[in-house]
Length: 399
Length: 157
Image (cartoon, rainbow over all chains, first blue to last red; front, top):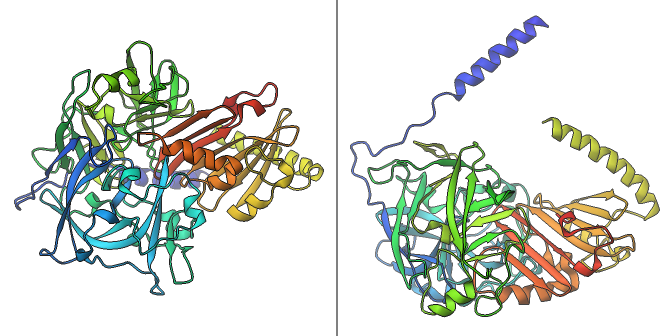
């Protein structure tokens, strides 16, 4: 018994030893580094939805630098993973190669969001943004007329978002916490509502190796590939017509992307959730998400709007509020924010598309989604899972 | 850790009770929102996975785990009507199946919203809430008028 105990203690000591170290930034060294700053903006965009953060990306056929297309108004999303483009904005002359399964059948993806789904084939492209490059990147081409029949197991998750107006943007640059959109679950099982194999007889769910799924484009960069910073300025209380900011690639990899005084809040490694404490309640389903256009919190906290902003919160007076965000690592940080009467705010400035004080019910009493309003006036860091940064290993948010 | 252990023992006890209970109500099966529990089995066949049956005085919970890991719970009243459903997991559930005749109403209402992110639909006779993000979805739907006496919406989770 005692021998066993000693062996166990030794094992424990070895484990602890193995856990030391960490950190290490992966700096630029002496080699020249790519420019890592890309302009981003909030504006009316192609669908006139408030608080959509846009970026432009350059897409080329794999290995080609001549036949490329710049695609603007691609939404920046820290709540998902993968580059997705609407078929209607992608030039057919790009001729991006279709991805196929082991039998040579086309691979098509059904991507699910909390508010709907998008359907389209998986193709391959090289993507450039700022001076960064993701080569041979899997890209979903949403609403491609070559695959018009959507399987029932895909369309059954909610409203379709297969056109620019219903999608709200020309595409989605998913640069969230995860390296792939689905991960190991889709490699082990053919999951309805994820990847499909599409022979002429019809599309059926298929398992797909992790490496062949949609990848986090930032994770594919040769440098600055451990995360991102979104920097947006503060905006006036009444809102703004447009806002300009920066998307910075890498965390602690260059002189311009250090953590500074930002607090690192690690997330649950499977869900990407942190916790939020607000008004005496604990919200365990909480996350920071540039792809959500509002603060989404609780249910029935304030009266609902009934005019332009139907479904949003419309408190009778502006609510000046404070909440504490807490990571899985027990590090917490306080955020001050406001919630205005959305009907009045939008009616007062119908040409405005940036508001830092719009909110809507999330649905249940445990959800608090810190959408784009949270990002104004803050530098928000999103660190990718398994990647080392000076603040520790991802996944985490920091601000 | 202790809590998990206790919870799993508690679940086992409930499952044992459920197995007994199952003898009374035929087999543990699922139905869509607002439909009688007798219509079921469809869901389990369609979604696959495993079903658990949990019973309490005021309602019965049919819990189904899809291959993706997403868990769907259906809350059945003593009268045998599904008054609420809740889901949690890495993929969205088959809402057409889970919401039944309410699915089209949900899609129509959710499509009208001028925002991106979690959805909360509040209509007479129907509440639907869908949130979370890629790899971690959470939501529920219920018919407020159909909640059994003493059951609050917070029960459905």
